[in-house]
Length: 66
Image 1 (cartoon, rainbow, N blue to C red):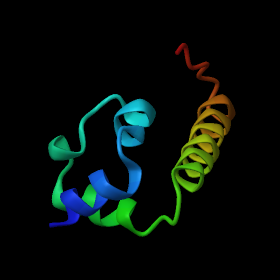
Image 2 (tube, rainbow, N blue to C red):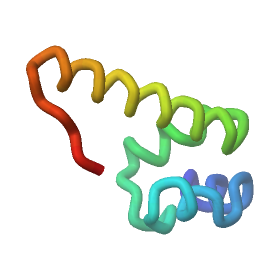
Image 3 (cartoon, rainbow, N blue to C red):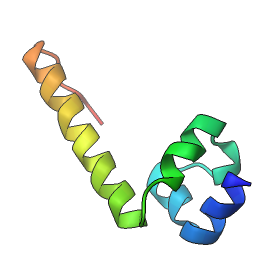
Image 4 (tube, helix red, strand yellow):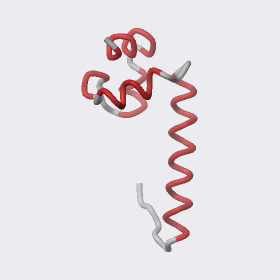
């Protein structure tokens, strides 16, 4: 049911953002994503998480290669 809501709300944007189809998400992942109001909110949260991960890795002397 949550997967259907994600597909209806975000169309192909979940796949564009994460590179996976909504049906491949776990129940917890789908429940988390359904709480966002827009795909832009998801993109912004992802960008923030990536920045935080990079900051933490750099603080440990690890440089991430994407």
